[in-house]
Length: 331
Image (cartoon, rainbow, N blue to C red; front, side, top):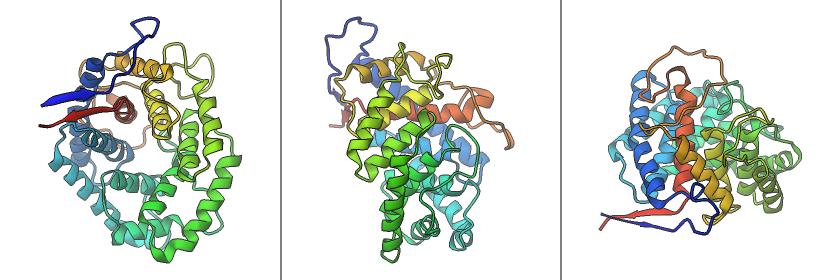
């Protein structure tokens, strides 16, 4: 097996800023087995789908697979089946407009995970898409939970819903989808984000709808918030600390939407921050901002009561590192 890596560039002042190819590769490889362990542990303890323990790790793992990294294919298949089974349990609730716990955000994350994993539209994905476009008067999608940063923002719920209806919407839903897309575009253009999570998903949403000029403006504003350590903080204010959740999500979004290149100094500084904050066991640690309301369990990801936000942070960090255009080739 050989590894081909696109160079991250040279010529930066200060070798400590420039992450080496081997460091990036090593960080990804250390993270993969821990994310896999997390999905297995989450499914063992939770019969339902979760955004932090299923969607985010699986999205990171299938991105790693696209880049040629070896992942446990049986595990991915099991997590997709787990998610689909959970959606089917909620079938009647989606049909009558109630949805499942977690509302639009949960439904959106589930379909985003399936989309990234290459799942083809079927009956249940069409039903969930119908739930997302049921309210013809709404101009965006709201979150009915308060678990920041992952599950609280209408920007997050709106982007995930837009991706879901674009990928899994049915022909019968076409007019409602077009109407919701038009309204969501105006909402995203006019609504001011409050923190990094919202800035990230505003950019992704505007990009999804083709509002490239406004997305570029929002991206430049977000880049201005990069800190001296190369990272981003979740919340505004000089007293806030950079963390891998915010930093990973920013780098992923800006690379995916084309607002950063692998040669950009700001991207490389962000990678440096992620590499330096990864623990020896392959994890990243972020302090939770959410009040616990579910029974505690050990998912397999470290950091105790901070494990759920940390596994999401580890997923974002891995996704960001993978945006350095690493490709592993199998002979």
